[in-house]
Length: 178
Ligand code: PRP
Ligand code: MN
Ligand code: MG
Image (cartoon, rainbow, N blue to C red; front, side, top):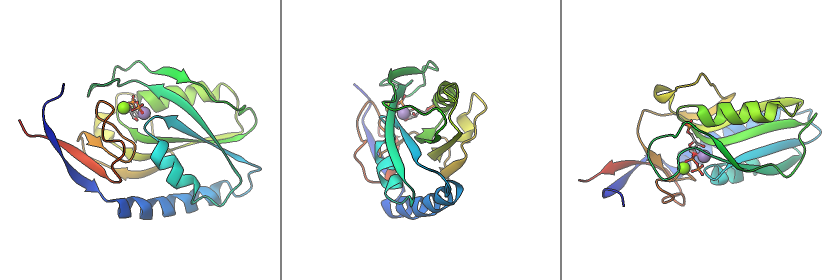
């Protein structure tokens, strides 16, 4: 259904792993005094990143998920964020880290952050592996970012193009061949 394309490697699996070690160290310091950090992955794109990140955290951790989506199968954000699955656990009075794969227009993380802030967590922080500031439509900055990237359509390491390529172990950019 899409034009033919190839994927060029942009960020290697090794570079991602090295960056996650640094981020995990910073997060472990920030939450060193926590009773238990609730790490919330935004499905589906964050499932690879959250799996690698939590295994580097030296903290008591609870893992939960929330499914939010705005893209469907296209290349353009619908700008309308929908919650398909909510958290299982309560976050009131708890320390929470929202884990996202990429910030593009900013609609998804801005919406979800507001949505979860209304439940009155003790501390709420956000981390995104990738940030594409050139595409921002709503003002949003994550507390931690793995890599700032240019305005390219990226896939892999959890990120899809029409639900494909999430299983690539690296971040690649889509290049159309026709
Ligand atoms: C993608 C990506 C982020 C969001 C970023 O999710 O995983 O969640 O878009 O875009 P934004 O900053 O413009 O909101 P998508 O809606 O494709 O759902 P998915 O995670 O299930 O692929
Ligand atoms: Mn997503
Ligand atoms: Mg998607």
